[in-house]
Image (cartoon, rainbow, N blue to C red):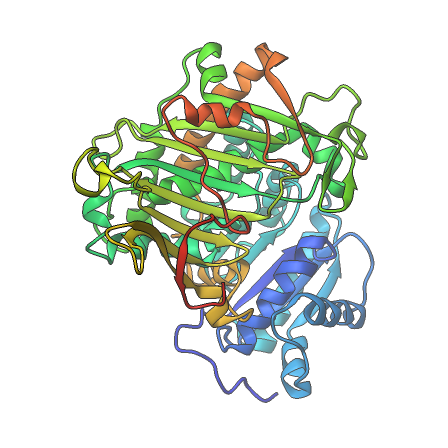
Length: 518
């Protein structure tokens, strides 16, 4: 077997990767393409094997055929190099497994020993559970009882969200996993932490002298985090109706991005130090002490029939597997405060929802206005300075400042200077799952969520959910294709703020200085 000639020096140690749920959508769309990209770029040691695991029967040939189709449809690279593809595919095998039968795990252990010998793997094991959370505990116990944790190398468990439904269920799940794996062996994926611009937040803050000194309540008026989707619930109606926007997006993606913006500088660029600072932010979140506080600080909505472009859209209650009387929120917005010395008094506005006009994830940092009735503010209504971090689908940053309007005497014009990372790099930028799989294989837990992060996030979210359960009268309808309930605008207007336009809704009367065509 000819080795990959471009293996990088930071490639992880050899390991067997076990993909539970190998015939599912996540494996097809994300995991297989991620592994191929890592291999093509030399970020996988040749000493690896991948075992696809699911209940349905598949031969190795069928499994590799599925793998090939997955890569050509979803990967940023194509499998057009026959020699490279052949080398890569040889590392993949498939096994039909009943995850409730420990005997199957014993067979899997024997197969693992054969793969160790074939590919010179030193007993390292990475178990990726692309399964329902209710199966995490039983699979972990069977991994132990089936002998798969008896190899001499390291053992790591990678699990997808949701991690529980609320704090009690998350605690129960964590206790189950704790019977088998140590905390440092558990890698809880939040794929938003693998996105380029989310990870770039730390660099923007801590590597630029004109940001970090201003990153506090003396200079920042508010922070806005938007995660909007144009899609509805599609085929996930049954799951989503039990979850809703708060649990599906708020407890994980939204709060994780908030912690990255609000955290203190870590003492070292070490995973545990970074996660320590994120936990301090979550501990500092001002909890809602009553249902009245929930109503005054949080808006929830549910989309009704509407229109996006020329497409007519049905309402949420008309979606498959959704009840006619469902009170599940498809949108929520909240005003959140971080009660520490850096952020005291600064509102963080977060919003997420389905069937909104634009698909985007953005963070807007609005700086405080210049003093009124001084110099240019005497004659002009000066626009606030903004720093915007675009996370998805476009990646980049832009800064809005005030400058002299060309050809005019002291007239002021907003000017936005933009760096479009997606435009410069194109589609061949590493995707979140590539980074996170690579990090897990190297034992780098920086961008995975630790148990205390999960528990504090659930404490905050559970207070909101409790208020909604006890008073369901505040569910606001909004037409599909709109920006959500009007009350979400009132949430900001109370303090003289408004939602800033997001990518795809650029402001009028702004001059752009950019590295892309505008």
